[in-house]
Image 1: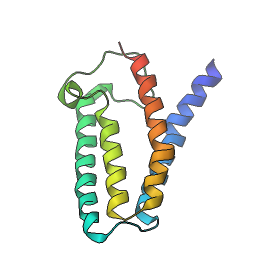
Image 2: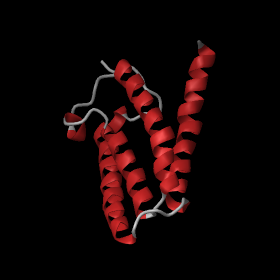
Image 3: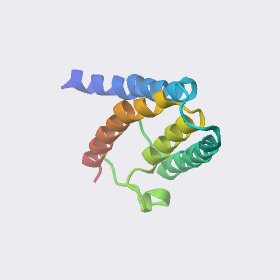
Length: 130
């Protein structure tokens, strides 16, 4: 049981952030496929995502943590309207950067790797909240 907990801590603190970074890297440097005028839409989506992401962290306050833990559900700010606004912000940021940089690789990585991991993490968090 202790080994599983340590494994989850390692995954949450090292592996998952590296996956986010890898997706941002691919989004920025990946192959080009979107016409340039559409890339401006990507910039707007990415900026919205960063603002949404940062606002959700502020709304969490002291409830913010790396590992899901048993605690009371936050119901203020964006959390009043969305269950996981931080993940919405992260997703919008990655998708926006991928579109802005015309990165097919970034979008594919998001869909195949980051999105499923985010959904799994959200499910773990839902189970841990009161």
